[in-house]
Amino acid sequence: MQESLLNSVIKITKNRDIDSLEYSLISTIKEFVDCSEIAVYKDLDVQEELTIERSLSLQTLNDKEFIWGPRQIIDDPEPELVSCLRSACIITVKSNDGVEKRWLPISFQDKPIGAISIVCNELKSADQVLLNAFCRIFENYLFILHENERDKLTGLLNRQTFDKKIKQLIEKQVLKQHKLTKVDCHRKLKQSSTSWLAMIDIDHFKSINDKFGHVCGDEVLLVLAQRMRHFFRSTDLIFRFGGEEFVIVFEPTNFESINEKMSQFLEMIRATHFPFVAKMTLSIGMSRISPYDFPITVLENADKALYYAKENGRDKLCFYEELIADNLIDSPDKGSDIDLF
Ligand SMILES: Nc1nc2c(ncn2[C@@H]2O[C@H](COP(=O)(O)OP(=O)(O)OP(=O)(O)O)[C@@H](O)[C@H]2O)c(=O)[nH]1
Image 1 (cartoon, protein in one colour):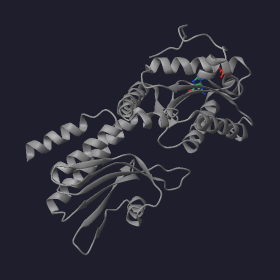
Image 2 (cartoon, helix red, strand yellow):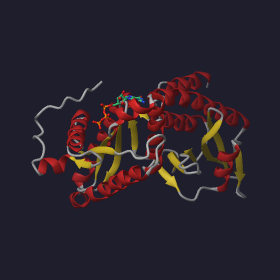
Image 3 (cartoon, helix red, strand yellow):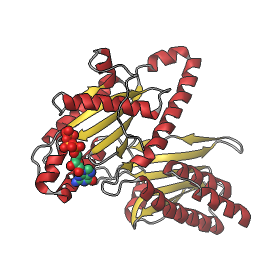
Image 4 (spheres, protein in one colour):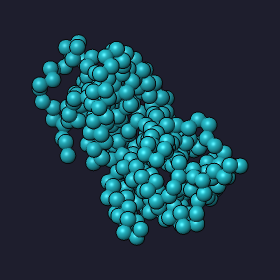
């Protein structure tokens, strides 16, 4: 027991990203505690309101079979989960047939940010001690990983994590594509839906710095980052890529939807009153992420579209694929001067 426990701790602390950490935590709990369901919940804290996402779950079907549940926003969370998140206390509910559901809070810098739920027949006191210990290890390690993945000023994902995250996304798409080729008619239906990458750059940001100083420039960056977090879905990955440059990787959707969403975003930014600057605009270059693309190619494509937007009046959204189709930019073989790592 002691040896396998140590091995589990080693397994948990081997992780280098938060998604794998959640996966290890659930598998470890499953290994040591006899239960039928485990899930990790997160409070996404959108516009200071409780917005709960179930980031990962495991449901046992029988001795050998279980299913992993995907990331999902919970529109109607159970009141016990809400209480657990609000009070940072363990909440337990026992049904008449003896099945127990327990919610354990997960805190980050003393603030509850999520919870682990577990369903089992009877939670023995030794299991309770283990569960609490696993949650504390998870919390501590979450803190370290969070610090490594995030940009210090804005709290958005940093550039160093981009490569890993986009590779994971492309791998997922390739797998999906393989499955769909087996069901050809399904593929036709889904063809127009792909992931997208947006490269966003503030227009004339240097003049904000020059006029008001770097600290005020930082404040503008911070407000923009908050606006982006509130405007886009929690499942979209938002990176601060460089000084005043941001990259967003979107979940699969079709051209019309992403075009509309990004146009609304530009409109929202135009209407926002930023500190020190009454009006600020953005230029955006977009590129489709195809399953067999290299991350650098996607970035280069979005960068070319962004460059075109900057050269053609700024405050606009340009799609790489449209620019190519309309012969407005060079063919794919010509190089770009994007500086990668
Ligand atoms: N405040 C602040 N400024 C930064 C940071 N990183 C980069 N910058 C500044 O961002 C500015 C970027 O300027 P440029 O690349 O010339 O572009 P721009 O003025 O935004 O003009 P266009 O992109 O051509 O519209 C420079 O003044 C940098 O010093 C940062 O972390 N904080």
